[in-house]
Length: 525
Image 1: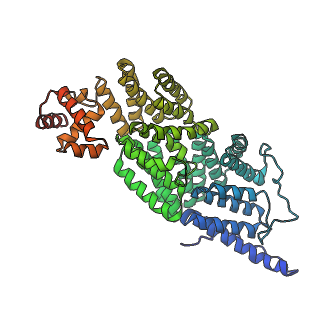
Image 2: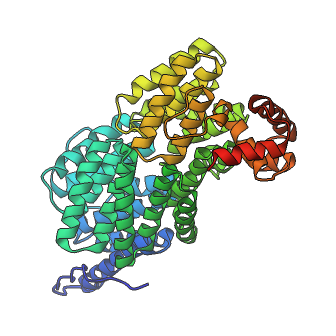
Image 3: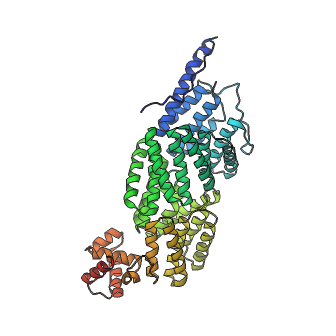
């Protein structure tokens, strides 16, 4: 790993008056070298090592470079955040209320300008920006939105008149923490322009990371993919493998929406390879979520539930604290269709808190959708689905709304409310096609066929009378699979396959597998 010291400031010359003064230039120079080392490790090494280097840098710089020491400790928080270590994040944030000497002990004579300030009091200048940012992060981590939202909003406000790339990058991250997707897009684009103007590939890669993530949250998947691909190139140029891994995780998420399972596997593998070596819990959780969502898009709920279960459940295997709630709605859907509703109910309890927190624009709609999937009361489920759709109108992006339309249409069809189902499924199909969600669009077409209204893109009229599960079984059988092999592929019992295959024979008017193979072959040409 090459240490980049190009941005390290030289330590000032200090007149030597006693032994303590004699070591100050050495300590400051060492502090700046440790700061450069820690930042390099944060983006291209084990993040646990980065955290220790950055904390050491903060202690060495505190005496004469308090602002630089503050930056070092915020970067140490970034390291703990990337590792998913909430306890370490809070410990560092707590220590930031107490200034430290180069020997690592509290400074007895120098109180910080922020030590006694309230999170609701606006900060000014450099100190105010740092204070607002750390107070907002602490409010989020301690689940106190009343102490998080105002400081983070002030960070966004200060960024409106600040063109420095470092500040814009922090403001973009603050916008994403707040769930303010529009601000994330705007500030992310400004950070990217500032980074390119400065000619710094490292800043450019990070700006592209925040911008791509905001675009994913906004449902702009094609743009997110384009920016993440640029981000990989910029990160490689900068020699920042951790940032490249994060971009690969986002490319896997974009591919999981498009239904490209090969791309999902490739990008997830690239992300996980670096994440596991360097302790990047956030990147690893995003990559695992992408793989599970690809399974769900292809009608493999059991595989999706198996993969997501440990990430969203309680205990030490739970995924990163900033990601598992985003993946939880996928798990609930997968668990319900895999016949594991009790597992889904346990996760919904955690979603309750997340939706109430108010930082995720999709959370309330997703919570209503999850509850609709789990309730046995028909009227309650109907009301919850409609409530979810109304809540989707308050946020940006087509994809999540289309998923709710699809699930609602499927629910209506199974209750023989075919005309209503047709409207919901048709809306879902249009939205999926608009945002490039190919595999999800295929699910909507399958439901429309089963509903008796084949979509214009699919010529298979003879197979249109089959349900999606019957169609999958028919195609596997036509490929030569036995009932047992079909059961293994679809993760169902052999008895279930026998039952569906008998119905397929009746619906298609065939008497043998040979006839079934001929019909499937003809309509697949």
